[in-house]
Image 1: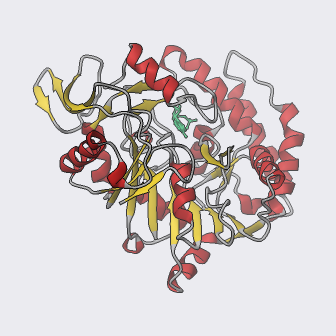
Image 2 (image 1 turned 180 degrees about the vertical axis):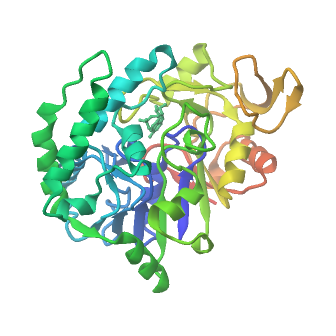
Length: 416
Ligand code: IMP
């Protein structure tokens, strides 16, 4: 099983790259996260955003799996399958959903909203899709799972959990009304049950036993990982490579290549430390040129230079074998581009990520000569300075960059 994941704070362009790579895999499987993700894919002038469904769905013949590590909101799932059906894609025979994946209830979303509001200025900047409360119920052993929808007392189980949530919500000053979403939610559950619910861990291992190729698709990014990200400004799942083993039920020894995706610069959406953030016209330029607005929430993304301290840390955690750089076209038109290689702290300089990324940390930069918009279909046709940037990053990280994306379309992908 190969794994593809983000090395920064999410939004690295995973959707597009999975779509490109999916042609080489028989199976594409999501292993964590939920509708907080927004994987964008563009083809033939049309843009699609996937939240829960793997990005392999546009490749005919591929099997798509939503693994046990994913959390599913049936309302959003139903909207997503209708969007795909309208695009002529029927998933009834190619999509499998883990019975062990947890369900996001309308009351989880209400809890997300109430707890974020109560945090005031310390809020995480959650997408408010109910992700945190759902994973809390999972680890707290209270959650409802997809397989529970097949049980005769499912409705009673739903009501018991909802009532528990209402008790918690009563402690918050603002009332969040979710009753109007319940009908839609149950319609979503009916829709979910029209698809193939399965013990996907057995399926995935079976595919691997038969020599089929499986691609595990990560969501969010390493710096948002629950353990290793910039805690508490993180999501609630394991976004690192090890999360693919847990989230699909695959043994670590079965992991092959690990594709680590990063943007040629950095972005972050939501609150939390971001050492190389640009608060000036350059940051604004990157935001506009890169259309850096959240695919799920529409929020403007914070933009900054590439951060090698964080990137090296992410490569180490994931055991990355292949780097994939995206948005090299966006980082064009500059006389010079900057890359943070170390941080200056009170205690001196460091090349490794410190425990806290507090605001008086100062990134120290290298400068590389800039390039003009690349209009190329082979590596050799890329502007010389972009090729130098690639070679510089390979030297700094010790990992080959095997793919470079120079635009949102499938066709704007250069392999080496
Ligand atoms: P949550 O996962 O919705 O609770 O959000 C927690 C943090 O992760 C917030 O800062 C979000 O902006 C961020 N986040 C969650 N999902 C994504 C994503 O898919 N891309 C980028 N940031 C995300």
